[in-house]
Structure formats: structure tokens, C-alpha cells
Image 1 (cartoon, rainbow, N blue to C red):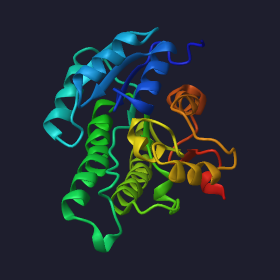
Image 2 (image 1 turned 90 degrees about the vertical axis):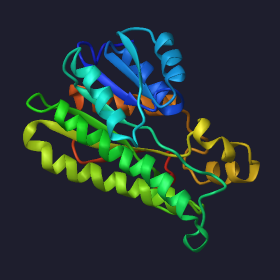
Image 3 (image 1 turned 180 degrees about the vertical axis):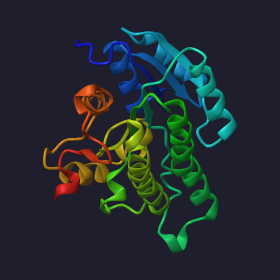
Image 4 (image 1 turned 30 degrees about the vertical axis):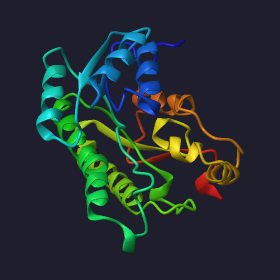
Length: 251
């Protein structure tokens, strides 16, 4: 394993499972000091304890609650500067998200509170932590914010489109301060978040057949682009969308 992130400090939200877990552990293997943040502190602690490489710390963090977000960043600030933030945590309410005419307001508000408000709060405190130092912020987006993907996810798609837009605006506003902001767009990636689709052979086959590479993605497929965007190798990249979707959005 290389050491592309040696000497850097990184916060990864949603690090207790799925893509966040894989990315946080890969960052640690690349030599970074990694803060594994998750609303489920037990999951974050288990993930951090399994990480090899750099120093790993578990943090309880509810991204929809500003007090919780601020407290997590304060803990990090007490230990040193922060170079990398991966705003990854999110929710997709399968079986509840629906066409707009059928969508319950409660489902809409919960999805937006976690995905869009959560990204806003994560980035708000990230740029404050990076003030005067620069750094790299990476948001996890979604193909559903770009194309329909054959599914009805009104709240989820809208919230992720908001994340894409937020990342572009923050990239423009903070470029002069040396803070880069990019969005990674994983395709159909088999993680706990999409277990409902994975359990439905018809839905799963439809998504797999829609990718050029003809297979489902894994959390490990997303690690490389995250390391690239977190490292100095991507020093000239900001405001971009980086798709890791097997060609899903290109068809």
C-alpha cells in the first residue's frame, strides 16, 4: 500500500458501514489520521478498531444536528488541523420514497434533513476548520441526481441534486482560500444502504444491465477516486463530478 495521505488528517462521515467504512479504512492504510464519524458510535468504533495504518478515532456524529456536528469538529480541532473531509453519510428510504404525488411530507423532510442539511452542516464546519490552511472536501453524490435510473426516488434524487449544487457553490466560494470541493458519484454499489434493491432480483438485474461494465459496484470500487481527490495528486481539481458508476450515467 502506498502512503499518499501520510501526515494528513481526514474526517469521513457515515464511516460505520458501506462506502464510508471502505474509504475511511483505505485512508488509514494510506497513512492518514482518520476520524471515523457515524451516528452509530458503536459501528464507528468497530470500524476504527479494524483500520490498519494511520491513527484512527471514532466519533459519534449526527450530521442533521448542528450541535453534534460542531462538537465533532471541536474534538478534531483540539487534536490538530484537518486536511480532508468526506461528506458521505446519507439515507435512502426504500419503500417510502415515491412519486411526488404520493410522497409523504415526513419522508421528504427526513431525507432532506439527513442528506442535504447534513451535507450543508458538514461543509459549513469543514470550511471553518480549514480556514487559512486549505484542504480537500469530497461529497458523495448519486446518479439519481443526474438521470432517472429507472427508479422513483423523489426525495432522495432531489436531496442528492442539492448536494451536487452545494459542492459546486462551495468550490467557487472557497477556491481562493485553497479549499477544493469535489463530488464523487458512485453507481449501483452493493452496500447496506441498498440492501432492498440487492434483495430484489429484478431490480438488481435491471441496474446491473444498465451499466456498461455489466456488474454491480462495490465499496472498494470507490476508494481509489476518493484517495486521488483527497491527495495532492488532484491539486488542480475542484468543482467537479467524478463518476464511478460502471458507465450507468453514460448510457
